[in-house]
Length: 257
View: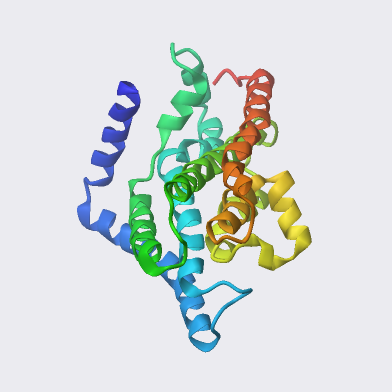
């Protein structure tokens, strides 16, 4: 962990070298996600609810996904840019170092500018939590924390899949952006409003609904208490992600350059 925080410090100092560029990048990320949520605000200004969900409930919904994606993109970006590592023949250098390959790739790239989105998610949570959207209990507060942390783990798994596929294609698969970048757009609503096929896909194929839609039903008193345990169940998704990564590493053949 000490080495990881050392890398984190290096990336932060690098980003802060040009402070105005860093601040403008943060502002740009804020404007993008704020614009996404404003579409919800304007819609709820015309209608009282969407799919039976009020504005405070949708704010809670969107902020959990936004916090999860922001954590993953800030600290796990090395896997998202793994195609560049292969293209520049940097992976050979990683393989001769006495550290885990996954750890080294994880530390290759971090995006401190994503902390701006995390700050926005925190502000939205601070507004939504006391708004009456949820009748809070200690158990529900714990479920909310699990939704964010386990959601970040799921996005890390998706980054891992994207990196593992690069061993075979040498390029990242753009189709995965549906699950990597898309949730910032369609995650502003509980996934159930998009229909049963989408909900089933996001429950059993890529378990994003296990860290958003189903736990929200428990928080809003629309489902049984065991829905609150589903974020922990979603972590099973990391097993095939890690296996695919190990398969990709075994498949790797150096060019010798």
